Amino acid sequence: MQASETRHIMRGRVKARPTDSFNYVQSVVNRLRIVKGGMTYSEMEGSSGIHSTLLCRYVTGSTRPSIEQSELLEKTLLRRTWFRDKLKEKMTVTKDGYLDMHTVTSDPNALKWIAGEVVSRFSKTKCDRVLTAASSGISLATAIAIEMGTPVVHATHSKTSGVGRYYEADLHSRSPSEVSTLFLPGNQMSKGDSVLIVDDVATSGRTLTGLVTLVSNAGCDVCGIFVLASRSDAWKEKVSPLLPPEAKIVVLYELKGEV
Image 1: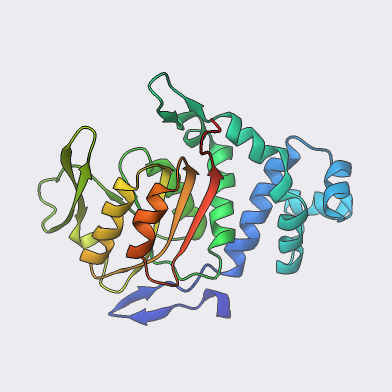
Image 2: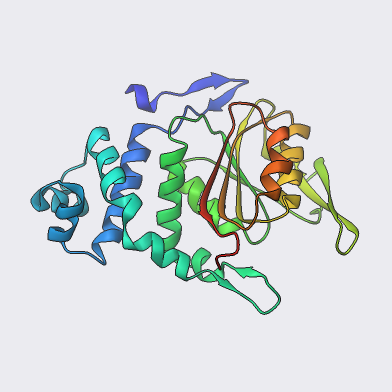
């Protein structure tokens, strides 16, 4: 068994290591195939410095890039490509100021791309679970979990009969003044799990604070937070003090007043 395929056995079950090199390289290949939909191999070569023949082999799957080549592709091509801008164009604001992400989170290529970005940013982070709040973040969190090879967990606003124990976290809103509750089935996480929290849009930090509380109540640790689009810095100021020092916050799009 290769080192990247090994797992730690703890508490009678398999514990995941940090995202392995296979998942990382595959995430680069998946995004490279998406880029090919809008660029010629010659254009890709001009951006990356990698010969078009080799790029073609990567895209077709006849050759896998090394980790070093994958990192080069990210720095020179994937982080600067047209597709990132195309995703941003799909984010629209409704008349009441709501940032509508459905066009993004229902697009298979968009989800593959975003999931690949997350695998890249958290490639050296141990992650046992991906957690989000139902329902807007489910497709995004599921795509990320599939790319990582990690179970996905959904916190909901109501309980389901027959599940048993739940962890709970109250969400407080000022305008209008109200309190709602997030519920997490107790059998979905095990004590000591490292949890990546995912949210499609962050503004006030209300939902993210609740998710962090659920992780803490379950006896688990937040290894990081991924937000697709951030509309303010208020949520970071609220959530950051609740996280362990090593936990990373990654935001793909900063949209403060831009959309």
